[in-house]
Length: 232
Image 1 (cartoon, helix red, strand yellow):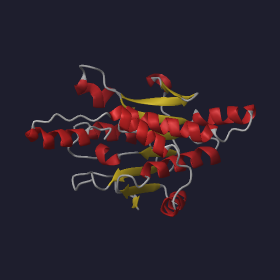
Image 2: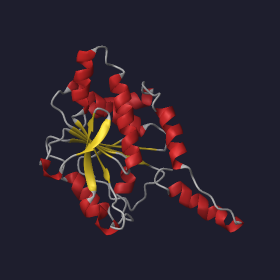
Image 3: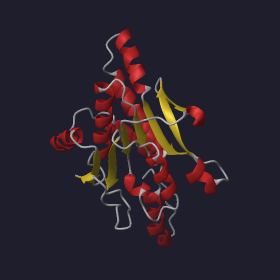
């Protein structure tokens, strides 16, 4: 819904009836967020997948919409940050709305565990080891989006701050790519540049990698990485 695919398909189907259809993405995001933010315990299936994450450096989770793929990714990220005080994590989102939702869930989950000022400070520092990457579009300059405008943002005090381009390369212990079926679609004109940028943040032998994709939107034209990548 947030990518506009549902709205486009709906508008096309009802146009022959003389009806104009539109989707309130903001309202959908609010409802979706309200539902998902209440999640705090994985289902037995999600727990099994999480257990596989612990022993796997390259994992691709495929599932239908609503099966909790993003939730699994969030829990793995949280586990990495909490269990390794030096770990840095990069969450890759298809759009700003998904990135903001992810950060909001992480903040709520992390801050709910704070019991005093000292633990609040520790959790504040923990969140600063979390970066997100998503495409930023400058008006009237769409051709440069893939080359220049996929930017990293750092979570500081619950808000996103742009990481300066001159900050140098950061070594991540975990990279999570949500909605990966969009990123690796051959029909996406920005796909190659997008993949190259994500790859630049992956250090062989150091960075664990998790792909999350929707089986209903994946096609034979998706060019997912396959080397040492386990599918579940």
